[in-house]
Structure formats: structure tokens, C-alpha cells
Amino acid sequence: MNRVRVLIADDHALVRSALRALLQAQPDIEVVGEAEDGVVVVEICRKLQPHVVVMDLTMPGRGGIKATEDLRRECPGTKVVVLTMHDDEAYARLARLAGAAGYVLKKSLATELVETIRDVQAGKVRFPVTELPLPASGPTPLDLISEREREVLTLIALGHTTAEIAGKLHIGDKTVETHRAHIALKLGLHTRADLVRFALEHGLLRP
Image 1 (cartoon, one colour):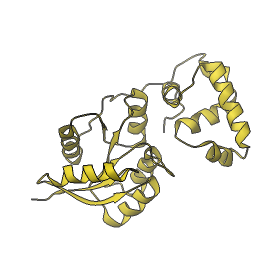
Image 2 (tube, rainbow, N blue to C red):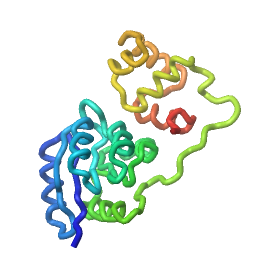
Image 3 (cartoon, rainbow, N blue to C red):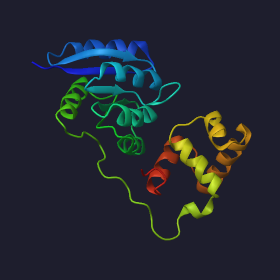
Image 4 (cartoon, rainbow, N blue to C red):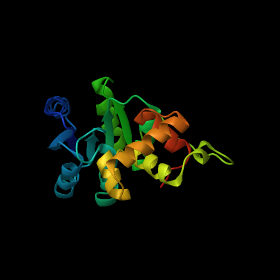
């Protein structure tokens, strides 16, 4: 039997240990490695070429969304199954745009993760949301914010920190926070989930 080679990416050692025990107990799955952040997972995938990566979204350094984009480009034969606590359509849509093939909530039954791994390895897609929103036509709430605020909003939605945004846009940290405050005031978007959902609905994150 050709077993599915799986790499676990999560910044919590206890979670990785529990996932390893669960997956190793399956006769058709083999855990070939672990990674604690989004940078390491890409490095390990280049060496081990696993069939599937079980990817947490929220990790230090380079988060799961950016790591998934990197894997799609650098290890195209590896499928990504997101395993996350974020029970929000916006995150599922963002993961799908990044190239993930499956999306499982950490609160789900263990059998759902195992079944999703098997399904994506067989070429299926397992997502709570399968269709991406189209950009709105005509005047939109985007008209309320400046071009720079759009850039900041997009980078926040993609998971970049204030310092990373400041570096990319060559502005100060305080300026980034000021732009974020203006976005919240103009659009009523206060959480990252709100920003992700808005960015997706208005076409800011489309490839």
C-alpha cells in the first residue's frame, strides 16, 4: 500500500504531537515531518516532498496563508489541508485563493481531518465555501478610502504585521496604525476577519 506522506505545520508542540498520534494510527497515512512556522514548512517540503501538508493558519513568522502560496509555487505536487480554529467563511475563502485543497476546523471530529487528507490526495477539494465572490460593479465602499489605505487593508488581510506593512510600503509603524484606524472609521471594519471578508468581496485579493 502506498501511504499518504503528511507533514504537520503548527506552532504548538502539543498539537503537533496529538496530530502525529492520530495520523500515524491510520494504516494509509505516514507522518514524515513537522514544522513550527511558515518558513520552516516550505524548507522541509522542498527536501521531503510530502503528498499533503496539514497547515495551521496562525503561526509566527510566515503564517499559513503565505506559506500555502509559497508551497503552491515551490512544491506544486504537495496539497495543503488547512487545520484552523477560524470558523469564518472569509478565512476559508482566503485559504482557497492561496491554493489550499481542504479546510478543516480544529473543533471538528478527528475523522473529518483524516477523510479530508484522503480526499485531497485523491484529487478532490474539501471546503465549506467553494465559490469566490466577484468584485462589485459600480460605486463601492472602496471609494471611501484612499489608494494607500487600500494597500494597507490588503496587506493586513493577507496576514502581514504592522512592521512588515511599514517595510513593504516604506512608511512608519505609526503611519500604518493611522491608516488602519481610518479604515476602521470609514468602513466599520474592526477585526482581521472583517478586513479579510471585505477584501475578498471587493476583489482586492484575487490573483
